Amino acid sequence: MNYVKKCFYLFLPILSGSLIGLLTSSFIDYGVLKKPPLAPPSYLFPIIWSIIFILLGVSYFLYREKDNNEQINKVYYGGLIVNLLWSIFFFVFKWRLFTCLWTIILLLLVIYLLKLFYDNNHKWSFYLNIPYLVWLIFATYLTIGIYFLN
Image (tube, rainbow, N blue to C red):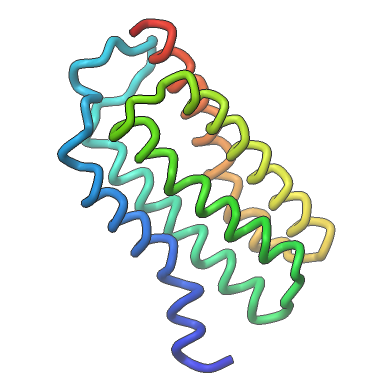
């Protein structure tokens, strides 16, 4: 695998997440929303998402070092696109109910990606995505909570 491809696999999630963060930053209204119990302060989100996107890039890089399964590729990139669109739908368009459903779709895609990694013997890629799954479960709770409280 050449150097450019390696960099692409490693850094696509963090770079695309950063770009979406920059594009949506002026629309973020998290501070004024009513939030459910356990909602973290806003300064934690960029930290958490940066860690998750780094883990996502590393997991995909490790997988691509050994394999090029078309189904895994589709689910990975599809999930990344769904993830990136979430911020636009939630913060820019304020589609709170829609993002509840969108979050569940993302959660199901990540569960399916984990299954594909596990079933295709990409254990490190599987394990590196566990924090993503845990965070998405919590993010689903937050999204639904915010919808009902606002």
